[in-house]
Image (tube, rainbow, N blue to C red):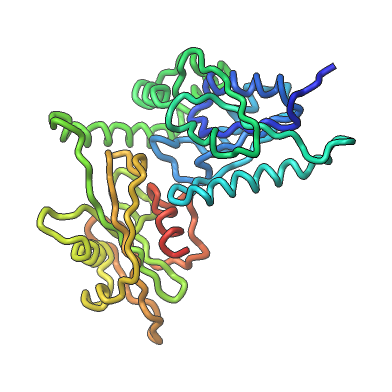
Length: 343
């Protein structure tokens, strides 16, 4: 008779892709818990080199690897909160609570026995110590498998290896024939060429950029990117700091170049109400990029929203209702920046 140590074991990961190290964790969890909750991180984002597969695709990876788990294996999307760690912790707690409350506690048990399972392989597993209310279960990563080289091999060479479960390899072989694969592979090629521009430097450079978060009457000003990386994605107007330029001057320049907004530069500058640095090390595939975001609040106008038109690096410029923002369409961490700046 199966006597589990836990009612629920929680496993958090990005699974880009799901590999044999992840498989070992889930196998251990199924041996020790009545049910296993897999929270699929970095969900509801645009496809990037670091996160090329959607939640639905990753759910397919995992369920195909464990066809007999049935309802014991529960998967749920988990959105990032890059610049609000406590907000992310709260979201994890709420998601787990929402799942566990669907199952009544056993007779004589006041609360479900919940644990957190994983292996402390690198900086991406730091979350294992962030939930003291749940017992931590460590699983050894025997072969030290990592998703990063698997992604690189797949998108640059079109190959997989034995570190990926057979069911996932089959799915990836089909995905390799898709237009989506070709798009991501082209992004890899672009980034590799981009990085060659400074590969002879004594150390990797740190880039400084600016982004304009312009709002008026419940709308935000966005552009559609004209070039790689992120071609076709929505983005905040912004760009690189010129060598002899101050940050505020740079953000106004980039804003006017990319949107041709019909508002005088002094008015734009005078409407800056907040600025903040966004420095997640993985925010850009191009390299270490620290951006300075400026919140520009324009007063409502009887004539409506200012006219805009795409220019420079922008294919289009447009106003969007804040309620219509789609995190899966926004470039890099721009959705997180907007959420942080506007609240």
